[in-house]
Image (cartoon, helix red, strand yellow):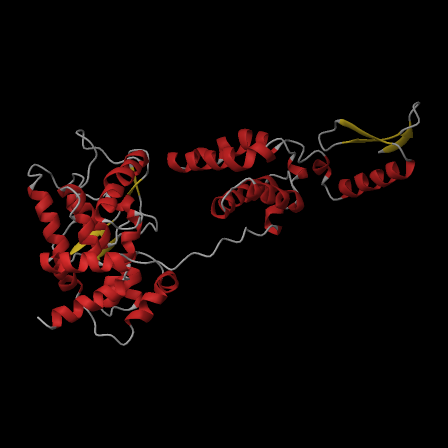
Length: 391
């Protein structure tokens, strides 16, 4: 290593990298050149000269040349599509040209602020931050960075969410009455077994037993199936009214084999894609809600109805968490207000509550009454319970 003065008055530091190649860097001041020379000697003693050249490639180049072939390619097609969406929508447009070494915590926080001002939601922005952290962690492991700067960046604080308001059986039945047999049965599976929509569309007849439904797969969004969200194979109690609904749907499909889908799509009876599920939600489901006069809810929200039925029956949080395939902590945080509402009240029979809601007289009288008042699952169930006790 050497420090020399050039004819133009600048100072140059020369050194050889770990591969023996001649390197050099110029400075206006000799003091700066001396500082750099000392730094090069220090790095050479520690065997870290490679870091001088590290981190020069842009984030976009690193993603293209390293992350896509070495990491993303091993993920499922749906996960790859999800990564591409986050990269194009939130990350590469602004940070793509930036050299890896320039992605400091401050620079990333500025990116967060700019994306929020552009209208990005906190949830999606935090997912983008997580993906960026995964990319920069790989860069640190490859020696391109000393450390992962995302580790020093806090996620965006999410807006507080309102407490879930489960649809009561009388309201569920009011919506079901506006649907054809197939879709009525699908809504029953969502509301009275708590399956996620992706799990319901991946359900096969062989998964339905005499007393339970075995939840072991979900659609992957591109016409195939995958493991469930938690990866567990769990039996869910099959309530008698839902069993009757499934029998009616099975009678309408006499040729269906055990391995056939319960809710296939189209004449080819294929697995639902994300587009197909979105279309069902936007058309059949939304239309049924509007014709029933019920405020919009996601099909996923029917899962809350099943949870409330179980809590109204007096089941423990651990039992409910097993049926929902969620953690007890999540059940408590999501349904704490529902639990408090049922505290001290007589336990309700879920099957009797559903059957009462299906009675024409109850559905007509209760449907209009509670639809107008926006009554909660707890209030309506308690009312149904009193009607049942009164005979």
